[in-house]
Length: 71
Image (cartoon, rainbow, N blue to C red; front, side, top):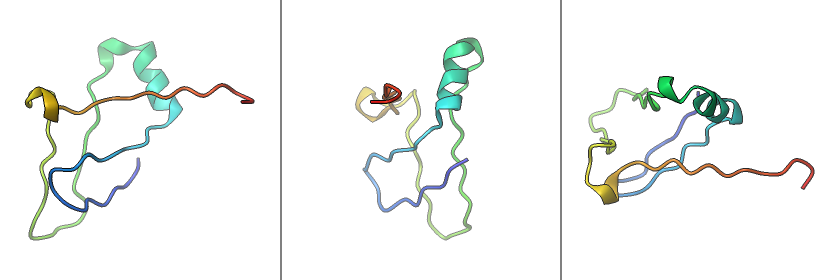
């Protein structure tokens, strides 16, 4: 679990997922149902994040960056 504080609308946000989470998705793609985002603070305003059903330029993206051990 990680925490992110939003700072405005119409922005991209990055969530760092652990290698174990990414590997679990790769190992069992049929059970990959995505990531759940939950609001933790009760405030008067909140933000909505786009889903995979949004317009193509607003859909979330998963970018996996691999590193070579010892590099």
